[in-house]
Amino acid sequence: MPKSHKLVYAIYVVVWIIMAINPKYPQDWLLENVLVFLVFPLIIWMDKKHTYSLLSIILLLIFASLHSLGSHYTYAEMEHFNTITQFFGFERNHFDRLVHFLFGLLTFRMMFEMITPSVATVKVALLFTFTMILSISTFYEVLEWLAAVILHPELGMAFLGTQGDVWDAQKDTISAMIGALINMAFYQNYKHLWLSKRV
Image 1 (spheres, rainbow, N blue to C red):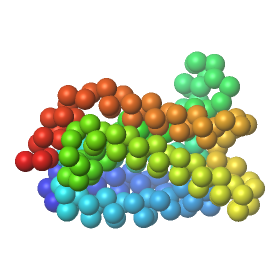
Image 2: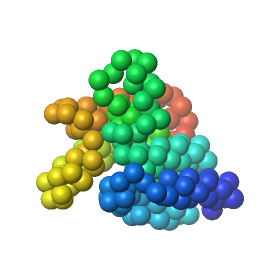
Image 3: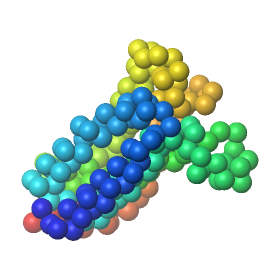
Image 4: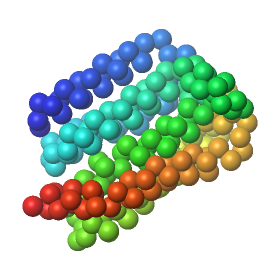
């Protein structure tokens, strides 16, 4: 694994540790980080195996760091986003919607690089990546719903962060879809990336 990748991972670990200190709702923080505990080692293992581009690692770091910030305060009560909420006159804190959008926007490249060796054309790789983004986003919304049903109602609602919006899950998924679609608009760039990964 390149040293630059190790540096990016080390930066994320530092950010994660800082955000793990005295979270607003410790039980919710733990719940939000279950997937981090599972996925982070997998990403490192996959990077050692396939060597992702540095850019994809950096984009993932940005997304993961924002997720850590959201889990520290909870997405619905991310106080550093309140200024934006007040400036635009929003009725709710849209930090959760922003992070879902960034999931589709920032993780797309890494997933594309992951899929590329197994498909025959760049169009198929883009379609599979887009489908993966939507599938993961939808699956996560199902997990949130299960948490609200199974766990204590107060913890479940903190984890969901719906803020009274009955269409929250659908809007979150659409946000991720828009982020993914923006990537697909840069077809030529991904075509060059696909060709470089096929060499």
